[in-house]
Image (cartoon, rainbow, N blue to C red; front, side, top):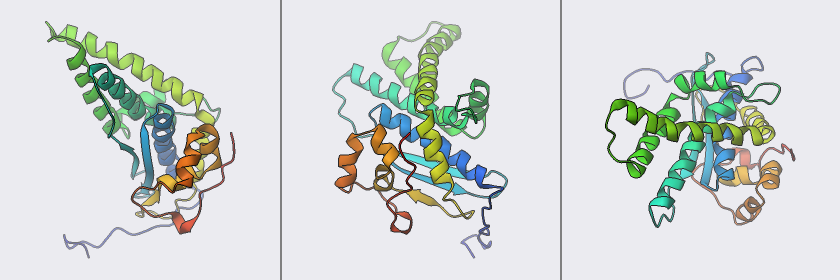
Amino acid sequence: MNLQGFPPPPKLPVGSYHQHLAVDVARHEAGHYVVGRALGLSMGKISVTLIDLQGGHRGTSAISPVEELSDKNDLIDWLGKRVKQLYAGVWAQSLGCNGQIDAARANDFAKSGGQDDYGRAQLLVHIMRNISHKKPASRKELEEQLMGIHQPLWDEAARLVQDDAPLIIALGDALGGLVKWTNEEYTFTEEYLLSMSAIQDRFPDAIGLAERGVTVAGANLDGASGPQIGPV
C-alpha cells in the first residue's frame, strides 16, 4: 500500500508488441541528449518509464545549467541552445522509418506528449525577447518578436536532429529495447551513455569523460558498459 491507501500500480511485461512505446520515449530523450551534446551543453543521464501499455510514460534527459556566462550575449547564446535542445525531443520523435523528420508529427507531439518541453522552451523564448527588445507597443508586435526568435530556433533544432538522425534512432532503439516492465524507471547514467561506441564516434571528447568515470545519480543496468549500437 502507498500513503494514500491504494495499492501500487502493477508491473506488466513489455512484450514485443508494445516495445515501440518504450522506443518512442527513448528516441524523444535521445534527441534531447544528442542535440544537447552537439550544441556543447553539459548532458547527463537519460531515464525512461512506461506507466502503462496505452502510452503513458515519463522520460528525462538531464542537463546541467551550470555555465560561465560573462555577459548578455553569452546568456542569449546559452538560452538559444537550451531552446533548441528542448525542441529536439519532438523532432526526434517525428523521425520516420525512412530516417526523415516530419514537421506535421513534430507539431502534433509539441501539443501533446512534448508539451512540457515546448512550454519550457516558450518561457525561455520570452526571456530572450525581454533581454533583446524593449517593451512592445502592442500584442501584435510582441507576437512578431516572439515568432522572430522561436522560428529560427525551431528550424535549427529540426536541422540538428536530421543531421544526427542515424545516431538518434540507434540510441533510442537501444535504450527503448532494454525497457522490459511498466512502472519501473530505467536509468542510463552518463557513464553508461558515454561508453557507447556510437556516442564516442560522434563525440570524441566523450571518450575522455568515460575513462575518468564521470557519472550522475543513478545505477548502471546490471553493471553493463552499455549496449553496443556500433558506429553509424
